[in-house]
Image 1 (cartoon, rainbow, N blue to C red):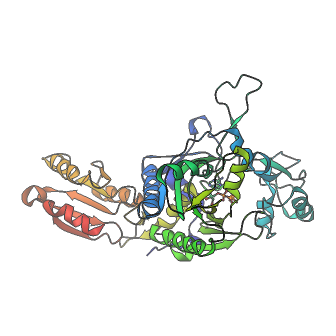
Image 2 (image 1 turned 90 degrees about the vertical axis):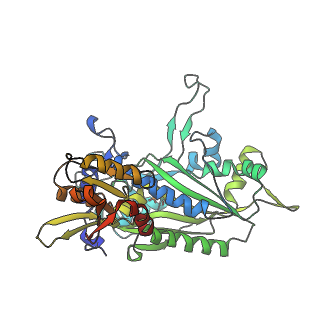
Image 3 (image 1 turned 45 degrees about the vertical axis):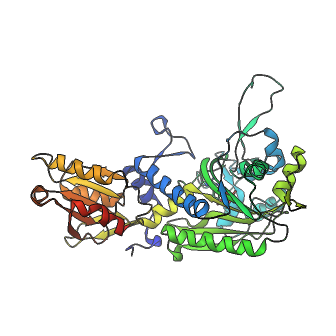
Length: 461
Ligand code: ATP
């Protein structure tokens, strides 16, 4: 349905557009900006919320054996020891000796076609780095003289409580959202008694001191993750894992992502405890395929670690049979999925009169605004009539009221934020109580009675 393929779109255009149209702004822009942090504007926040609601509905509400929770962001410092984050949550970093720009070595190696990742030891990565240093260029000065790669911990430290005391232990902002689920596993089992297998889901913030935040919302220092952890009996992981993979793939198609822009990628270097790990990748404009979600088969590692570090037994008792459940995890980055949705929907079209329109072809479920109410004029009672129409639909659909500028311009504005329907109130409305409904993609217009509007939108949605 789109005119432009992703290979014909440019990420720079999307970044510029998303600011101009009210989707995303750089954090603290009036102070020069804060790298790796973004704010969602009035249109963006609606899109983000719709993506979250769609995820929650499909993942929690529509499933008998999935339950939601929402954990506090701060956690006991030992949590991050148990999860391995204080010791091992790091990326290999090197510095340009000429201009001090920091690079993430595994990603730079990947860019020149060398298979590397953050799970390799410092020594392994330095061997590859030494062999290929002359092919890697500093993004700032173009030089190739770098320091050795060393592990750079990504956890963000914070203060909580009596942080002036010397004995106080640092607390960390969460490096990943899933720990809140593991910590509440026992609470959930003891309070609502779910029958295994079952899943727990939550959307929560994560913070990472990324060495080089880049590619807009793709690699940021603060982001949200939508996670599920599915608890199964030991060794009963394989079929459930395949089912979850299929469901996650379908979710993206239902979200409006085209299959030609999605692919699976299996991890080559598994962490020692994992049984299998796949990522779903999206074909982003300009920088191409990269991860938007990880689907991981994690065995009993997480609950075993927390049992060991907390001293509290986190096994599950299934009619007298006790075991530490195995976990199948899905972890989706909301910023990355937001960017995929925006990239997918972004389109340009040449109209019959030769002018160009930018149109965002969101599916109507996630469109930030569903209906725009546009009085042709502010005078002669049209505004009052348009108010009536607004009040009629606004409770059921996210609606916008716009009475500024020529009607053609107002249609373009709504096309740009992907509003599926515009409703125009004109002089005929005052005579016969009908309005013009214009559809975004076809731009077709039809005359509908105000009293039939609710039914009309019910059928269209
Ligand atoms: P990468 O290899 O790109 O650094 P990762 O493998 O470390 O990502 P996970 O720890 O598996 O990522 O996190 C799960 C999801 O969280 C990712 O699929 C991604 O969508 C999102 N995510 C991770 N890091 C970031 C980040 N810095 N900015 C935005 N989203 C992120």
